[in-house]
Structures are given as C-alpha cells and as structure tokens.
Amino acid sequence: MKVLFILTYYRPHVSGLTIYVERLAHALAERGHEVTVLTSRYAAHLPREERMDGVRVVRVPVLFRFNKGVFMPVFPAIAWREIRRADVVSIHLPQIEAALSALLARLGGRRPLLTYHCDLQMPPVWYGKLVDRLTYWDNVAAGALADTVVAYTEDFARHSPFLSRYVRPARTGEAGQGHKLRVILPPVAIPEPTPEGVAALAATIGLPADTEERPQVIGFAARFAYEKGADYLINAIPHILREIPNIRLVFAGPYGKDVIGETIWDDLQPLIKQYQPYLTFLGTLNPAQMADFYALCDVVTVASINNTESFGLVQVEAFMCGTPVVATNLPGVRQPVTMTGMGEIVPIADAEALAAGIVKVLCNRQRYIKPRAEIMRRFALVQTVEAYETLFREKARPA
Image (tube, rainbow, N blue to C red):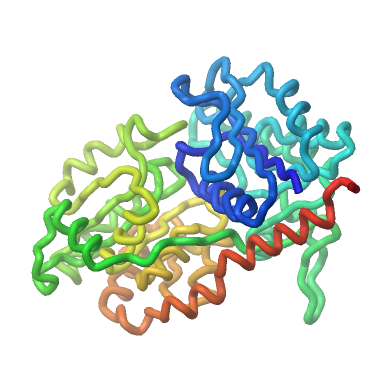
C-alpha cells in the first residue's frame, strides 16, 4: 500500500504526536509499504524532501508561524499531489488543515482516516479561546468528511468534546465505539536500558556513584508547556521534602527557546531559582538515552492539567524500563496506570496531592513494579501496527 500521513509537525520536532506517527510510519515501511509523511517545513534549515529510515518526508514551506499554528499557502497543491499518489490518507489531529485535507482526500476518491491525538486547549492568552473554537469546528468538519476516526482509548473518547460525538451509548458487555470510531492503543517502543548508560547519565547530572547515597530521582519527560504541569511538580517539592529529604527532579524534554508555541519557562524562572538545588534539565534525549533516563528515575510523573494530554506515552515507556508512574486523573491519562497497576493516580492541578502520590510510590516502590515482558505483551508495538494495517487495508482505494 501507498500510505500518506498528514500532520503539522514531524521530526526533528519532538512531541507525543510526532513520535506516534514516526513509530507507525517506520513500522509500516519495514513491512514493505510505501510510506510518505506530509508535514510543515517549520524551520528554514529543514530540507523540503528527504528519506528518514525508509519513510519519505515531504515538508510544505511555511510563510509564517503563529504560536504552534503554521500558514502554508501552497499546502493545498502539494497535498493534492500526494493524496492522488496514495492508497490511504491518514490525517492526524489536531491540525488546522484537517478539514481541508479530508476534503481533498474525498475529492481524490480516497476515504480519509483521522487519528485524534488530543483536544486543543490553548494557554490563557487573549486569543486562546478563539483558536480553540476555530480548531474545534475545523475538526468537526474533518470528522464529517472522515470514514473512520481513531482514538487511543474509549475513556478519552467518552470525555472529549470532539470524540464523544462518535461514541454510542455503552451496553452490557459491549464497547462504546460507534460506526466511525475505532480505538487503537498508541504505538510504544523503547530500547532496554543498560547499566552503563544509566551510570553515565547519573554521572552527567552529578549523582553519586554509590546508589545508596543517591537522592530519590523524580522524572518528568515532556516539553515545558503550560498544559504539562511542570509548575505543579516544582511546587510539590516542599511537600515531598517533609517525608523524603533527599530528592532530585530531573526533566527530559525541550525547554526555553527549544519549545515551539507557548512555554512557561520564563514565567517559572523565580520558582526554578528558588528550588535550583533540586532541579536538573537534560533537554531532548534520543530513544536510548530516554531508556536510561527512565531506568535512572525512581518514579516518573505525568502532571498534565487538561485534555491536551490524552494518554501519555511516557508512562508505558517508563513501565517498560521498570519505573512506576504518578499520573493525574485525566481521561485517557489514567488508563496506563489503571491497566497495569504500576503507579498512582492523583487529582489534577494539585501540587500537594501530586507530592502525596510521589511519596506513596517512593516509599513502597517494589509493590508497583511489573516485569517488562508483562508490559510488552499488553502494549506490543506489533499489535498497534497490525490494527492500523488492518484498518488501512479495509479503507484503501480499490486496486
């Protein structure tokens, strides 16, 4: 099959959405499919077209960028060209081009498939509500044109203003998926951590070689964006210190100027300076480094505060590396811990409750840990890839 993925950002930009599509695209390419990713050329140094690990990446020139949104006047022409080449068109939301992409797919005789990654909820800026509403109605138009809408979990689908339109009332013993909605767990893959890699990372951030003398390491793997809740984690420090006096918070992910869109980095500088001795910022890590990061951590936190987080891939990655998680009680986000028992779920936007969850896990860590093989069976990448492959074969244009 010739598969076309359409999304606003792709590598080298790092987010849960880009990682999701990257894993799926590479896996399908390895299975012999011809895979193209159509995305924005959000930075001038990026090539307009290149091949990355067997996947053809086509980047549309960007005239200007507003927050995370991009304006691409030539997008319709390039999208039409690529859609006509494809057997399957997979559009990944949220993106402002969603309805246009779905319409072009229909006009080209294709059955547009949507994957809905999260609700859009802008930070509290003056234009935030306007962008939220415009994007929502664009999504609705795309959904009306779509053949199938894919969600990560039924839990998130039921609570999402957009996805709930496609969920039928649940009956006893019956899933709530409607005629358009299909639930597919996200693709998760992470290398096994190595003792050498963990030791090297510990040395890099100045942790003692003797593990008994090390502080308890609390991990956070996300960009420094408003919705990720890094401020609640930092504000949890004094509450944690009452029970555990030796801790280190280690942040993996882009921060400062490396964050595309709204960031709270500048706003948090007074708080960061106040708790500087407890904080370490690693920036963006590659997959092998991320595995070592998870293994180094005693607990990983997902402190997200709204439905722009719908699952939290980092939770399952942490589980696979033997590390429990404390996650907020958001639809979808609570599912990895609920499905595995590898952590605690805490109230949203509550630093004291987040601290209590962290302390509970750190004081009883062994009871939360499950074998990697058990987690791998539940969240096997091949299951996700085969589910998408089945969907694509069902919906591909006739030969």
